[in-house]
Amino acid sequence: ITLLAMGRAPWCPCGYILPWYGPLGTDEGNMHLADWYTPSHIIHGFLFFAFLWLVARRMPLGWRFVLATLIEVAWEITENTPMVINHYREATVSADYNGDSVVNSMADIVAMWLGFLLARRLPGWASVLVVLGFEALTMALIRDGLGLNVIMLLAPNETILNWQAGG
Image (tube, rainbow, N blue to C red; front, side, top):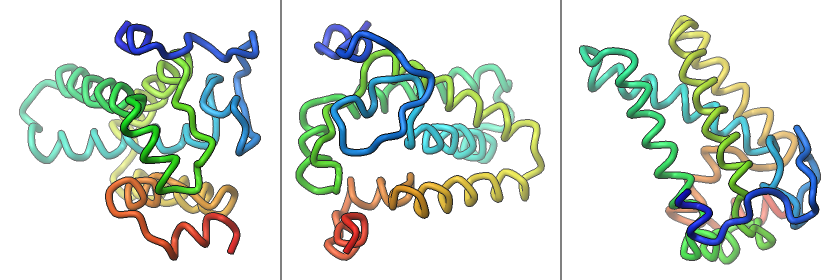
């Protein structure tokens, strides 16, 4: 509801919703269900599970899940503000970033749920391997990932930007 009130498109302006959208550098990126940034949202689930286990392990799992969902929802709203969209355009290789459709944001929340529930089931070492595997995969295939995304959002780095641009 908040994203719609912010003027975000409910779905891709192209008129259809794909389960996966892989091309980079197009205006349809972040408009379909899943894309190259979906693994980052799965990682959010692993990280939120671990963080909440550390700081609130006595809280019932259901409430930790609700709290993780609220954090992810807050991120989806923040990520789609003009300030953050413009920052991504100016400071990262994502000069074409237009924000997410509501459908994509909802799918990102579901991806976080998947990561949270996987983290609950997997042993800690396996969770670490999944997170590192997703980061390695996206870094190898699209020269980006959650770690690089956070660095470029908080403290843009020219060396990283040049590498991401293929230099």
